Image (cartoon, rainbow, N blue to C red):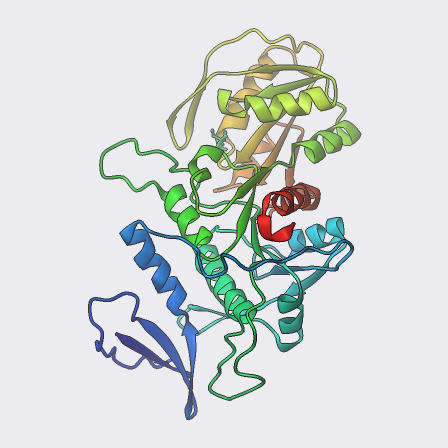
Length: 387
Ligand code: R5P
């Protein structure tokens, strides 16, 4: 099936020459007399792969790459993670290159590796920093991986015949760093027939890269059986340092059992007291905490969580802390989603809100670069081709 879009936004009728096969579906942009393929076959291969449950990446297996000490590799980003990509590049001492991203009038995305970046992408391994949130981030990430794969494999054919059309395959070397892994919420099947979204997105991404770095993923177990290695990294060390320098808490609180590991890491790093609450979520906006005596009278407390969305979890925990005598309460997290007026709600309950820039947000005060750099280094140690 071939779907054609004209450059001025006119969509011509689909030609169902390959009806029934997702793999044969491509979208073409007609620019004057030439046609440039803009929605890659790979996206559709991937969807096809997920449907069949067989998503693997085999093209580069067998080739070898030796990582040279001191080489300046490349960090790439698209539209959603530029700042973090710059922070990662600074942490590693690598170059950062921005890919061209724009939207067609019908809102579909377009991406291109600029000519001046092509050589850099082929020369050394690359790390693409991109979020799978919101939904458009998933498509953009896949399109960028597709373009990077083509360039590294030497598939350069283009209808304008610009530059060499084919080059050598330079082998494996594509890492994907996902600061905020969108679709991580549905990591289990609670009722029959539900999609395990986190696993589906994980397989899609794994099919187009050689390794994935994920930053403070809520439930890492969901990405443990992917076809490429995954490094789970965390910004808690930087978050601890930030709290120590700005808030000097006496007490760290995990607002639920799920955040105990992260929050207790922070408490240990800054050598202060720690406890946790037991939370029950009634619905997206209603949180109930089990009553618990906390030794917080006269103390400054920081509540540490992986993400803040509506702010409900933090507001309820802050209420419990104030009722027990806390004199100051701060909220800190890796992922500041801050949905539906969360900041306005939070500032009625806490004295400060601190987040990383894994997502663009108004409380981005903690660099995520060092955490991503630790993940990249871990993967380089684990990947055979980088030895
Ligand atoms: C859930 O267990 C997470 O760790 C967060 O506590 C939760 O997503 C925060 O959501 P909200 O801000 O909407 O309460």
